[in-house]
Length: 355
Image (cartoon, rainbow, N blue to C red; front, side, top):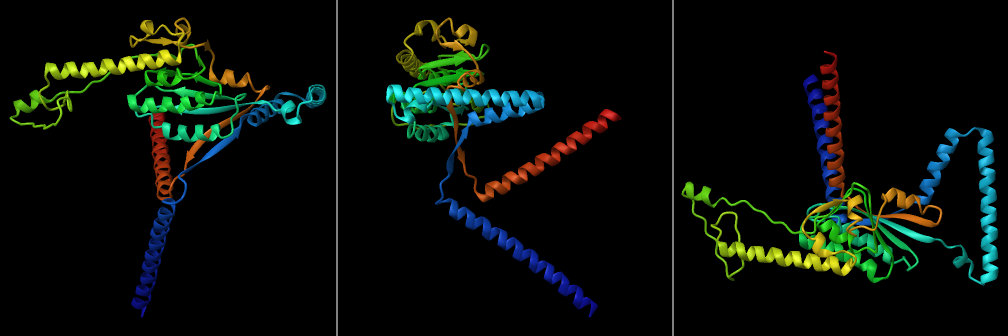
């Protein structure tokens, strides 16, 4: 009887585990099926003026005593009353609508962090589409751009996305805090105004291509390599075949043509640049880039944004990708592993330190 009781308890536990696993698998499959028809992301909007006001109020409460706080709030109330009175007078004297008299310019902020494939273009196109549905010619778009460049066709598409803003005649400003080189500068030059931090890296208007060749290694080991093409220039240089001077010449011709297109693009979008002087592939720090007209001024994105807090309504726009349940579970597992590894590392470091 004791054996039967233990066996029954074991069987109940096993069935419970199997049912739980089956439930989780069903939930994952169901969630995956729903995500095929659900939108993959959504636009998120942050009103930065509110964030700025909250931060300022927090500092006030930390730094000022009760008397100073009371005086500060009294002054703010007086200033708000005077502003409302001035707007009311403007409304009566100019016979404008109340909305026109009180509406501020809107500054829409987008972020682009570029890799070799300009992967962020997928999100950028969604963000620009959202902004263009609301922005007016009196508003402004600010792109905080960071990229060292990458594939020509990828950054060509990213530049075309920014050109959509210019086509709508909405002022476009690009701020470079760290780097906008090669394809990154191709994007930046579309803007009406380019601002850079003093030590931001700017320029690199050039084209580069490189690949290893293992042909001699294959020959040394008696390995044959064959590549069949239809079309004289279908393949010019290869990694495994024997490259020829004719193939190299054609490849170089293609590079030069790409460079010529790059220079034409910069000249068309930024006529103040002496393209022959800057299209050597060199880079400049921001403080030097002003002298060759690659940028219009020295300023960080934070400085530019804070300078408009009192005169504009500032919104940060981002497209956030929705994650499927399996992705969320995988991300949670990864965070758990990272946490365990970090705790182990900290413990091993502390032991090493104290011993």
